Image (cartoon, rainbow, N blue to C red; front, side, top):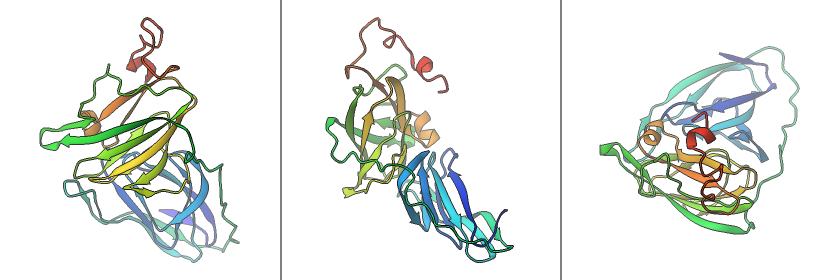
Length: 267
């Protein structure tokens, strides 16, 4: 049970920390005013009546109920594809709005500069394909199951890359990358306006998402993967290694001898 006064604005931090459940959230009596996505402040505050949270997704939202009453936060029925999972309508929380009204304050319109890599020089175009043999509990990125010592890509520090991520399966997957957030450019060929950077994006069944990433701050190894835990654990994960030259580090260098467990101690 949450409480609020009529007209009061509250900050809610919504996070899907589940292993595989998808949530399609709706709040009675109020809209979600999104001010942060995946820990990134948004360039343009946007409002929606529903928010889809695949595993790993986070939103910071401002909420305001203008009238007293009892309102439910629900997750609506959702289906992740012909071979995916189905989730029923459920009530997650109740908000009781009561007490003296509070004068409503204007909501912010921006929390940070709007990211826009539309005109960035692209150093590399890469293709990433999510596939699976679910009957055998095998999941792949570019036809390969995860191997700790294998590196899929070597982005060059200081460059921007464009990745086309294709989902050839009949179920949705949440794409997630560590360390380096990205801008979604399009989903199934439809351009997406720049609002914020993010680190989780839904891959439609039999669809594709185009993202751009600027590798500006860090060198070293990190992973990208499906954020459904069973898919990740059964192979749907790969490693990138950001280097100064955009290729494997020189043999014998400190970076070349650093293992994944050393470069990512929390993994």
